[in-house]
Length: 312
Image (cartoon, rainbow, N blue to C red):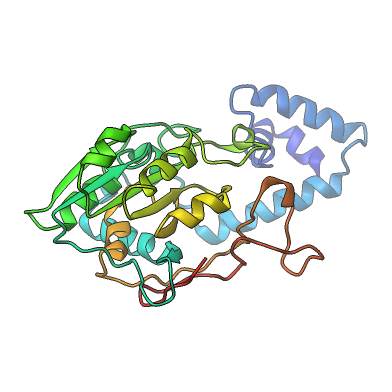
């Protein structure tokens, strides 16, 4: 179907050309006007338009969107049901990657004891579902706080440990709390703020909110597990990695923090492996497996089980 046919049938122009995946929701009329002009002047070949529209139409025909263009509102009450959340929880625990487990090969740090007397939970991402979900959640770039029903990692920890276990939560504990708390272990949850598209562009991929400093302060006094919440690897300095007892990449687990706790406390083992290389520093980027100077912190495909410990 040629572009001239679309132009002659304006409603079809608006429907089809707006499907060329150009995200201009508030000025789409101007976009369509400019696109048609560029096609008519030959700046954009007709073949390029026809190819894009053909692929989009094919998907729509196969999916039945023309026969059933709207979703069934009766299903709204089903969204987020128990079965959905259990499936999401399973996806969370299967996506976790255990990167470090103990400070020597003979003593794995995980799983954590559920009957510990007193534990410390800290970090900007420990009790923040918005941060767990990342971008494209409720709002375009995501948000902070309890933006949607779910379970934070802190809440999951509190639900998983024994009733007698005291869970002390401070987002950024002072040194006096850390030193005098007599904690069996600490869980520090750090990571990035939500972002989408270019707002996530950074040349410095260190852990935000002085995350490395917090990890160091806690891990210097208490046996510490660190959980990183991010959509990509972040810089973990060698001196920081040396101090921590265990390290987990939780990526963006979404609303079901219990999926994280499932693996931390040994109800399920870790099965995830790195889909990308975890670099040592920003100046290594871009880094590719097999590259001439390939020296990652953790290579692509790396991931431990709870029964495995490594000396790093």
